[in-house]
Image (cartoon, rainbow, N blue to C red; front, side, top):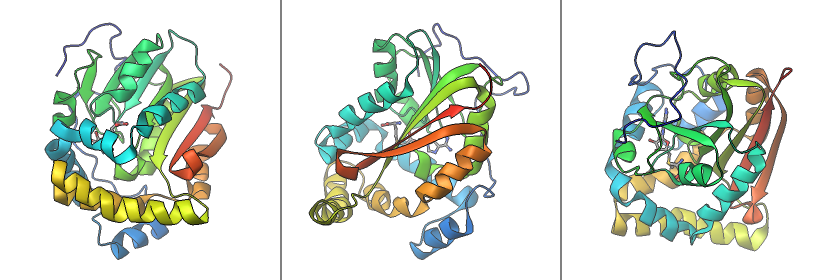
Length: 268
Ligand SMILES: C[S@@+](CC[C@H](N)C(=O)[O-])C[C@H]1O[C@@H](n2cnc3c(N)ncnc32)[C@H](O)[C@@H]1O
C-alpha cells in the first residue's frame, strides 16, 4: 500500500485505529432489501462483510481488466460524469470511499482535488498504485473527523456495504455543510431492447467473462448482488435522514449505470 503523502487523512479524534474491522450491524437494510437478499440466497450481516472482503481480495489483481471488458470501457466515462456532478472546485478535500484499485482517485488528482481513499479490502488497496493516501476501513465506521471533507465519491459499492444506512450516516457526519456527494451504482435500463440486452449481458456474459479472466464465483455473485440495492425512493429517504438535500438520481448511458448526487444540508 502507498505511504501517506499530502494531503493527510483528516482522522477522527474519537477513532484510534485506521484499520478498523467490519461493523457487524445489519440495522441499515430495510425489510424489503433483506427479503430480496434472502430470496437471492445472499448473506447479510457479518457473513456478508466477510464474503465481500474475501471476494474483492481474490479479484483485485485482475479487477481493472475485467471491469473495462465488462463495460466496454464505459465505466471510465461514468466516473468522469460522476466527478463533474460532484461540482466542487479544484483544491477541495474529497474522500473516495471504496476506492478499490483507484480509478476515481486518478481522476480526482488530475482534476486538482486533495483526494484520499478508503477501502475494506486489503487486496484492492494493494492493487491501488495511485500514490494517494490510503487506509483500510469499513464505510460504516469512518476514521475521519466530523465535517472535515468537502465531498465524497463512491463507485459501485453501495450494494456491497453491509449496513448502507450506517454508511450514509457517516457521510452526513464527515461532509461539511454545503459539501457534496456523488455516488455511482449499477442499474437496469428502463426500456425494452436495451433492458433485455443488458439482462443477458449482465446475468450470463459477465459471469462467463469474469470466470475466464478472474474468479468465477465472484462474478456469479456480481449480478445477484443487485438484490441488495434499495429502490430510488428508499435511497433518497436514507440520504435525507443522513442530512442531505437536493438528492438527485439519473441514469447514465440509457440506464446502464446510475448516478446519485446530493448536498450536505446546513449553512457552509
Ligand atoms: C465494485 S468495487 C468498486 C471499486 C471502485 N470504487 C471502482 O469504481 O472501480 C467495490 C469496492 O467496495 C469495497 N467495499 C465493499 N464493502 C466495503 C465497506 N464496507 N467499506 C469500504 N469498502 C468496501 C470493496 O472492497 C471494493 O473495493
